Length: 243
Length: 304
Image (cartoon, rainbow over the protein chains, first blue to last red):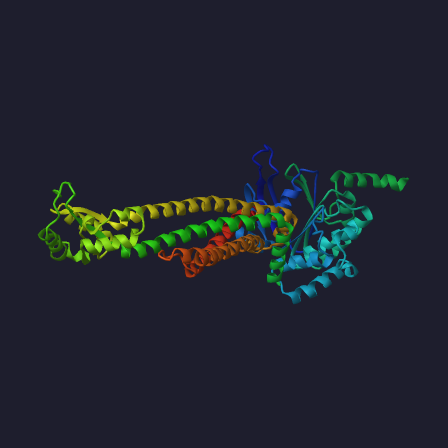
C-alpha cells in the first residue's frame, strides 16, 4: 500500500533533515499510528504520501505508484485514492454538512445520482444522518470532525490519512472519533494517523511507528505511545499486585 | 452537475468582487473602444484613399504668356508643344501607365475655376486669358503619377506637373497620426485591463483559498479548478467588449452616418458594415486577453 525506501527530506534553509533515511512499509488494511514530538517528521511523512512534498532522496510508493515518476497533472487523480482528515477539520463554512461532503464528489465529477446515494450513506456511517442540513458552526467539534471524516471516505478511498484528527477534541469526543476510524479500518481501509495523544494509542493497541528527529525509533505491531512507559508498566505490575 | 457547479462558482465569484468586476468591465470597455476607433480610422483612411486616388489626376499645366520659368519664356506654349507632350503620353514608353488624357483649354479652365471659386475675390480678377492650358492625365494606377511627371516635366512649354494626390497627403497624415494615437492609448489601456483582470482573479482566488485547498486535497483536476476563474475573467471582459462593440456601432450609425455623412457628401465615411466587422474583432480581443490573463493569474494556485 505505502512503502518508503530510504526517504530523506531536507529543506534548504534547515541544516537538519525533516526525514532522515526512512524505510517503512504499510500493508493493506493496517491501522498505523505515527507518534513523536512536534517536528519529528510525522506531518512531512503524511504530506509525502499525499505527494504534497517529494523526497530529497529515496523513493515513495503509494498504491503501486512511484510518486517521483508521477507527473504533476496526474497528481489530482492520484489523490482521489486518498482520504485526508486534519486537526482543524477544514470544512467550508458557507456549505451545509451535506454540501460539504457532496462537494468532494462534485469536484471529481461524480454523477448527481451517485452523490445523492453516497452522501446520505456516509453521513449515516459517521453518525450524522439527522444533521445533513446543518452548517458547520452549528455543530460541535466532534461532529465537525465527523463531517471531515465523511468527506474523506465518501469516495471509498483505500487509504485514509489523519493528521492529529483528535488534536482539537476533548477525550470522550476523541474516543468516539477513534471508534469511527477503527470501524472504517475494519471495512478494509488502511488508516495512517499521526497523533500526540498517548491514551488513544495505548487504548487502540495498533501498530505504532515512532519518529524522532526524522528517524524511525521504533516500529511495534501492537505498541503503546512510549516504549519506556510500557516497560515501566511491566516493571510496576508486580508491585501493584503486591499492593 | 459540473457545469452547474462551475457556473455557480463563476456567479459567486463575480458577485463577491462586484466593484472590481465593474472596474474590469469599464477598463475593458474603454480600451476596446479605443481599439475600435483605431481600426475604424484605418478603414476610413483606406476608404478615402480608394475614393480619392481613383479620382486624383495628374495635371500637366502649360506655359501662359506671362510665365517665366526654366521651361517657359513668357510665351504661351504652342500647339506643337502640347501635341509633343500628348504624343509622349499616348505613344511613348509610359503609355501603358496612362489610362486617359484630356485637354483643357483656357475657356474650359476658366469655367472650372469659376465653378470652384465663383463669387470670391480671386474670381473678380480671373479671365479666360489668365488661365493655363492643361492636360489632365489619369494614371492606370495612382502610384504611377511619378512616372508621368518624370517623363513630361522637363519638356518645352510645360509649366508644371501637379499630382493631385499630393494635396491629399496631409489629410491622410493627420488621420494616420490620429489612428496611431488611438492605437497607443488602446495598448496602454489594454495593459491596464490585463493587469486589472489578473488582479481581480488573484483576489477572487484568494477569497476562495479554503475551497481551493480542499479541491486540491480531494483531487479536483487543475482544469476544473481554473475553469471558473478563467470564465469569471472572460465574462467580465466580455461585458466590456460588448459595450465597446455597441458604442462603436452606435457612433458609426448615429454620429458618422447620421450626422457627419450628410454634411460631407463628397467624402466616403465608414459605414455600418465596417462597424459590424470591427465589433467581433473587439469581442475576440477582449475574450482572448482576459482568458490568457486569468489563466496566468490562477496558475500560482494550481501548484501542487
